[in-house]
Image (cartoon, rainbow, N blue to C red; front, side, top):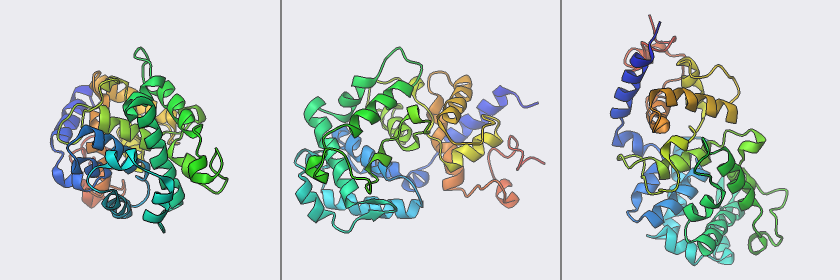
Length: 289
């Protein structure tokens, strides 16, 4: 039977093998364009919000956005006006999000800065230091963002029915895995290690919840971290609890390296030829002899 010690050894080695090549293939790379933490937290919220779909298209569309924002996302957001945004981002489309949704996101960022000085400060209104994880934090944060007055963007306080802006802010209360928000918080909160940034100090790394995308869902099922089939908040907490057994202080440290087995290394759980060089082959039933 596989021991937790063997599993930890393999995953710690996988964590140590993360590379700048992997980072370049990740939306997080856009945060690394900037050195000022005030720019990084804004870039992170934008990059994570659009981090769904094909990674090449994600990177292309994010590059288009950030090129138009200039050399300081923070400064751009502080002076953002929706009418300016409509002109600057005219024609933008990322799957079902459009320029209106992007402008609403930037307007929400501006509002957070005006009210709390930073995205972190605004989010911490909903965070309990004594909480086990981010369930209450993200539920409160998402509902509060969606309750802002978006009349300057949409002409009415709430987004119209044909806007997908609310998609940016899912909630654990509805069962969503909140993959993109969990990813954003991982980038901001985890200790700086050349990949994650460690710029937020108001949330502990042990309170983070793993972002569950298709790669994490598949690979963590293969590793036995969850038996659930639906990628929901319960699965995210279940996988995180299993990882917490391996590293109680920093369970989500393994997310980036596990995820990039799929994103960068091409693991699909089916191609046995890819298993030959896979570092977790001995632990995974697909790659085991």
